[in-house]
Length: 69
Ligand SMILES: [Cu+2]
Image 1 (cartoon, helix red, strand yellow):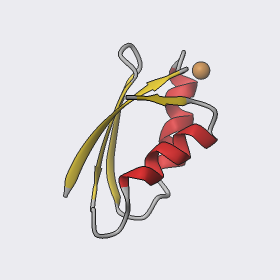
Image 2: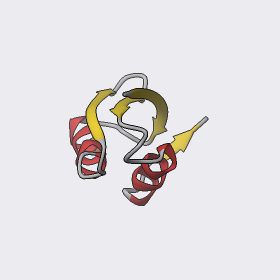
Image 3: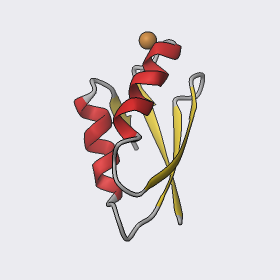
Image 4: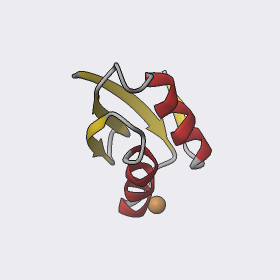
């Protein structure tokens, strides 16, 4: 299991947090998602043999939020 921490811009309320969670949850191999609204930190625990970290970025961007370095 691996962990990646992304910083996401554009989340302003718990609804946004829920939206980001909803797009990440269906990605195969995702085991756990933790999101801190204040810092915009999204911590994803996933199985690297089933998914690529780049998918998380794409899914978040597609949902209308911006992943920053
Ligand atoms: Cu919101």
